[in-house]
Length: 298
Image (tube, rainbow, N blue to C red):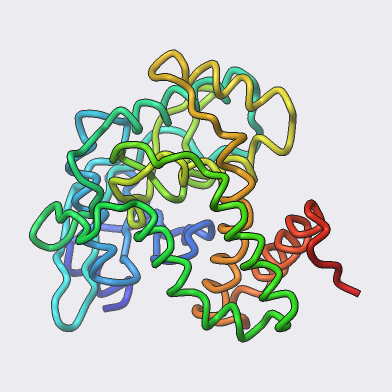
């Protein structure tokens, strides 16, 4: 269904529509209604993403500042479903101060206090534990799903060097944590703030109950690498809620992991639409390999 068809289906009296350009998977629009309210229309990319988003927003409603589901339409054989979501106050973050970094740490830690007895996912029938309870099986399966796409665009030498280095770094990771709520896209584009105060977290269509180690890389890219003191401020805030994680131990592996999966995602979704993001991730792979002198692109 088109955006206009969903608006009609939900019987929304819309005055203005603004597309959300920072949503790279599902279609999201900000709707200003004629009664003055603002809501968001979200049309997930797949039915799986609809059930996952629904499960997490329901589960986290009393635990973390997330949008309320105002209206919903489940996936059918013809559609992947849709949501009308509450508009939290504030907007996405462009500049991070130490005070805001500490608030981000507190919110992230609060998310990580949400635990489960098993690694798993929200599906159509509710929470479902993964068949294997070895976190590394899920993590490596995610990479495996992207490998054919990655191989299409990397030279044989670069491909071999990247995966050799990834396996070496994997051996240096500590044992995974117990299952906790991990966002898996915890970046500035999914954090909202108003006047220097953090107001909420959005977009749970990739979230899981998983190991904490996977949840810091995008924040590292957006925040920690921009100013040295921000990681300390974040960890200080995080530590007010739960014991800080050894992020510096996780990052060498996950920086390369994220860059490679980012390349695979761009190929799968179409390079003609995601060339800039592909170039960014390709450059990140080269930077990571230069750190170890395992590969030099001439």
